[in-house]
Image 1 (tube, rainbow, N blue to C red):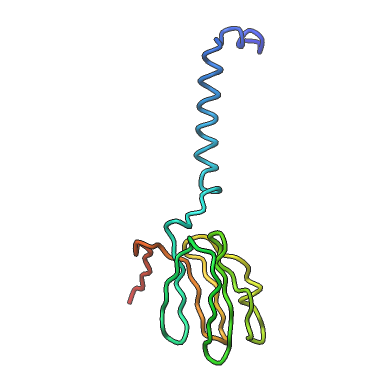
Image 2: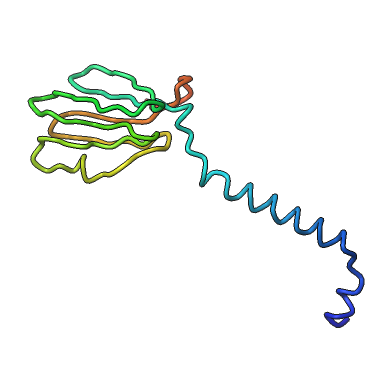
Length: 129
């Protein structure tokens, strides 16, 4: 069967249905790329053995003094990043922005852990032992 003869069997509605299926599949595939999820996440900050929680819905700067080092972290449009740190290696500043559940920024000299978790306590960490 030649290509031209096959196309003659297709009706305009067939093209509409094929296009709709293609668009649906593409949107399902691309949806996670555009989903920010900041409305259901919160920032967990562990410093000096204490844990604090912050909403990602506000744009704020937070000052932390831990293990003799000062650092400033920033929540901006649902992203979290370390704006300034006094630690010698500044790896926490170089780690950039985090915005998805489970992502974390660590500052070993200051003993600070910044981690994005679910607001509903749905973040599950398990250890077998």
